[in-house]
Image 1 (cartoon, rainbow, N blue to C red):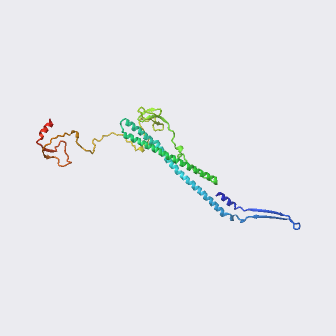
Image 2 (image 1 turned 30 degrees about the vertical axis):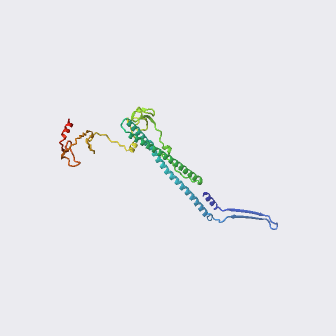
Amino acid sequence: ADADVRVADAGRRSDFGVNLAYQRRDPRFGDFISAGVTVSLPFFTRNRQNAGIAAAQASAGRVLAEREAARRTLAADLDADIADHVMHHEQWMRAQGTLQPLAEQRVKLETASYGAGRASLIDVADAFAALADATLTTVDREAKRTAMSQVTITRSRLLGAAALLALAAGGIGFTVAQPWEGSHDPESAKPAARKILYWYDPMIPAEHHDGPGLSSMGMQTIPRYADEAGAGSAAPGISIDPSASQALGLRTVLVRRGALASSVTATGTIDFNQRDIAVVQARTGGFVQRVYARAPGDIIGAGAPLADLLVPEWGGAQAEFLA
């Protein structure tokens, strides 16, 4: 398009020509010398090629506008990809640095509690299921982070190539903002190497080890990092990161003294002990003289009579049972 503009502009310059001629003729007529000047018409500049130049300039402007629109589209897509990459990277960091270690710590604690008889096998299985879910979440976040990183790098290269083409074609300098900021660079977003002070068992905080292995209780040791709050002077126990505590829904309250309620209201069913029943087989005729309970569901006190029976032939069986 720029070449077309230059060709059209070249047509505005008039072409001048000078012609000199010498002719030797018969002595009767003498020699002939001629001179001439030629100028291409139209003579005035405003009447030459103005329409063609305007059309070429419009075409060049359209090409530049299309190139700028493509560059802006690539830049917008790149910004969106960077935002998605940062989001997936933060999710991966949280899953790898917070959720998965907490799940591993829970497995260790539940296993130790099960060995001490304070937890059931269901609790241990639930802890292992939570660890598997946290591990799968970490792998999924890592896959999404890697995919977005490749897309972002590809689009950043395309944007850089578009900028170079713009500079080479028309000599127009575009100020292209750097697509990678310090906080968005995958290399700079990687966590720094953490310094390990020692290895320990959360069940035995006072027992320190120089490297990974098993504690005196047979549990796998975990590292204690230098950047952990109060790592050198913390009291023995287990500490949980505040963000992890909020994610797990844990809360702490101040300890206070008080009396527990002495009565508990509960719903239950009262029945007699089947082992305390003695069946006396004494088939005989008799008479029910009186029934104390009027209907099913009446409340009967302990030791209260149910009915009065008149059985003349029970005397011998009663005496035998009491004997």
